[in-house]
Length: 303
View 1 (cartoon, rainbow, N blue to C red):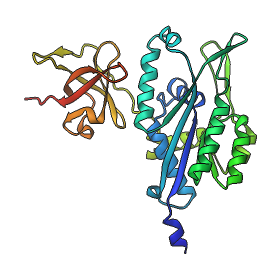
View 2 (view 1 turned 60 degrees about the vertical axis):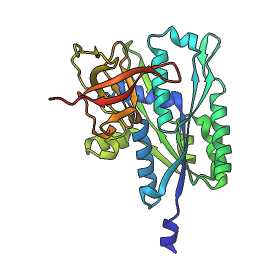
View 3 (view 1 turned 120 degrees about the vertical axis):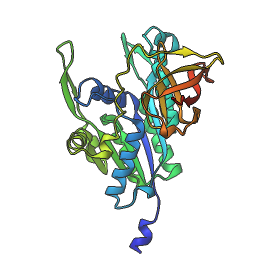
View 4 (view 1 turned 30 degrees about the horizontal axis):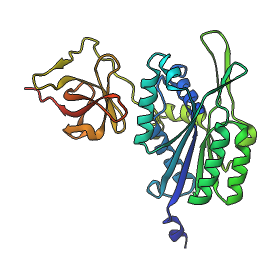
């Protein structure tokens, strides 16, 4: 009977408080000694691994069947006033899309002179509860810290859905000498089935060289010679070098913002055989969003 129970798939729904996730990712990129951003793909592998460990199951039987990202967003006009903001927003959208994360954006509003994400938490809770009812997740994973999510977790508990909470506590002094504190609601931690102190898990994992924890971070961007030659060939294609390789996508050195490409944009060799610094030939095109990207990427065979 026990063996039969273990063979059942554990379905996981993941819900991101987007502003909180990006705040945490910025902390690791700019403040923490790791100096690198959190990888969405790496986060999902960590979640599946941790659920399998806690539920005494195998990772193959613990699958993320739904993932949702909620955040307030500036208008295109407002974002265009910030250097490269539109470009980086689109790059992150592409990452979420590749990881099959559904995005939910609400317009940022000014209240008493301050920009706020009014209404995002309510939308987050309603969507999470409705999807948990309709899709019958075994486990809902919340990447959040706000005590406003306590009623949601209590509702999920009433459904019999187990809740895993991924949260961080950290403190640092910013460049203006101001003390910045990020803390998780104690009430939220107490109602969650599996509250995880991510700051401790990550620090311990990095110290122990845990591969699951190490994969939670985007691979460091390599130091590329700024004089890398970017040349246009007679056939209209362009030659340059691979700047970075990530989980299913990469970037090619190209002025001014470098070029994004997907794994399925590589025609030779297989995407997984490409390495940082490889000379490549490609076509510069626009995708369906009007962004300049690299297509038909192929390795230049050196003689």
